[in-house]
Each structure stands twice: as structure tokens, then as C-alpha cells.
View 1 (cartoon, rainbow, N blue to C red):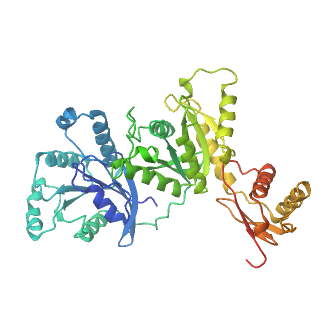
View 2: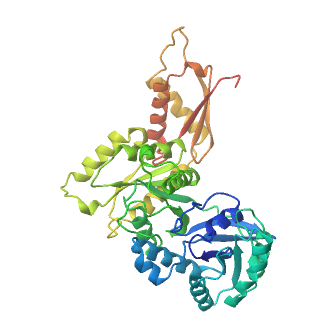
Length: 446
């Protein structure tokens, strides 16, 4: 059964992201004392009274006159469009207002917009920490929407009453909701390399705000996606700049941390490279993060339409990728233009292939035959004390990432170059394109 979707909407700086984090029990949305911090939609999952539902945090809704006066009108209007799309998709809308500010003209405009949606509306009056503010919440009856529920998202006061009212609006559950176990694909890269453009090209809709301004995307976006019958979840992330370029305490710092967490929870990362800039040091740093988390990797060279090419250009790029990404030379490389859709279908196709490689399991007899052949072709070198590394047998106990355990006489006799040699032989024989593999060596007493 599809989980109900609840949208948190309201004016800027009324505490939507604080409430979002409170309800899902973790710091997923960015909370920063600055209006307009949330731009794209941020999704999370929570449950209450036996009902599991999805929650979406949206950017602040501003009036047309406010947008016209803004120095960043394109982003502000895009934020509004994202909130309107969330309202359209939601089953229940939580309209959050500021109890300290009281009734203001902008709130009335939002209330009128929500009335026209025809969706069930739960009215939350936030920042009502004191008894006086809770009593004054009755003035919001003037909206004619529903009974105002005074809460404090920061302290958690009244959120249980709010959740009760939300769940009351859901249609009866006909079946138990299933957990989302679909593969997760994170689109990562430096700022302004076209990550949101790629997401929109894959989905054939303006799912993420796209502008030429670096850093437009701040929150990771989770979006269901299906390719050749395989359901997946796409995660668009904020651009990851070099640590020295991000000011401590700045909004972007939290966006980068969130992007790093997105790599941690994905199955495959699509690393976007700017074809004009080529492979930069920061691209290699991001690839290093992916390797540390043992995630699959697809390298997508974007803006391929923006460079001059000859018959050898792709080969030169592949050679450059193999040289600079030597620690992840197993990653497939595709060449695309997210802006005009050129070769974009190669990205999900490569992702499917990497997902299959991560689930590949090598039968123990085949693995041990390979190890015996590899040792015969290139025996381990003698240690300083005249001892040799001896292999008893090897097995693959798990996948995602593929993990191999070697039982040997003494793991201390293993040289790192021989470990690399064994990994290369395993890849030559069995593939594992696009995914790290882990090798573990255990002695007889381990």
C-alpha cells in the first residue's frame, strides 16, 4: 500500500523544518535562523498510532509582490513552485503559522491557496510555548480551516495532538505499509556540474530547482524512479565543495554534511564530472568518499555537448579517468548532456549493471580454484623471517559490497601489493564492475 503523504507548508521562518525534524526523529531538514533556508522538498518517513506515513518539508511560500522585490526572484519562485507541487501531491496538508507573530496578511493568502486545493488541512500554531500564546491561538479560527492546534516544534509541546489530528485525516489502512527497500541512487558532484539537471532529465519533470547559481540545491531530494522494471530511489544532493571553501556554521556546511550522509545511505553513487573542467582534485575527493563507504560508482561526464570533439576524444577521457581514478578504475564511465538529454539513458542502464554486480556471488569452489591458480602464477614473496603466506581456503560470505574472506596461516605475512594482486585477479575472472570489493584475511586463531 502506498503510504499517505503529509506536506508541511507555510510562510518563511515559521518553523517547518524544526517540526519536520521533530516528527521524523532526526536532523534531516536544515534548520537555520534565516528565512528561506529550505528550498527544495525534503522527504522523511515517520509513524504514529500504528500508521506509517511520508512527510515532506517545503520552502516558505511568499507572495508575488515579495518575489518581485527579491534579489533572488528565480530561486524564490522556484521554491514556491516546489511547495505548490508538494501541496498537489499531498494527501494531508499541515499549515504552520507563527503564534508569536499572530495573524498577518501573508498567512491569509496561503490559507486561501490551501482552501482551493480541496485537501484535508491541519492548522498548527507554532512557537506557542507560553500559556498566553496557547490561549491566543484561537485567533487563527479566522482562517476558517480547522481547529488551531498550539504547538512548540522546538520543545515538542503539542506535537502529539498534531499527529493525532494528522492521522485522523488518513483513509483507513487496507494493508500494512511496506518498508522502502528499493535501491538508492545518489547523484553527487561539485557545485554546478548539472546534478539537478540530470535528475530532471531522468524524471522528465522539473523535480529540482535548476539555476546557473552554484549551490542552489541544499537538501537531498528522494524521488521514486523506475527503469526497465527496476524500482529505485533517486537522491539529488547539494554540491560538495572543498572543505576550506565552506564557512563553518554556514547553511552550505549543513548541506555538504547532508550530501555526505546521502552517500552513506545509497547503494550506487553517480559522480557527475564537468566535461569542460575535466577531472579535478575535488572530484577525486568525492570519489574517495564513495570508496570509503564501499558504494557502487558510475562516473557520468556531463556537458559533453560543450566541448570540441574528434574521433579520439572519448578514448582520451577514458584514459584520463583510468589514470586519475586509479583507485576506482573499475567504475564505468558514460558521456552525457543532461541539458539536452544526450545519452542520459546510459546512466540508469549503467546503474542497473552496477547493482547486479554488487549482488553477484562467486561459488566457493570457483573462488578457491582461482586462488590456487593465482598463487601458482605469482607465489607470495618470502617474509624477512623466511616464512611464506599460505592459503587454506576462501569464501564469499556476503554481497553489497561483495566481501571475500581468506583463511591463511598468518595474516601478518600478507603484503599490500599481494592483496591488490588478488583483487585484480578476482576482478579479471568474475567482473564486479562499478563496485568495491572487500578482502578479509584471517588466521586459524581468528
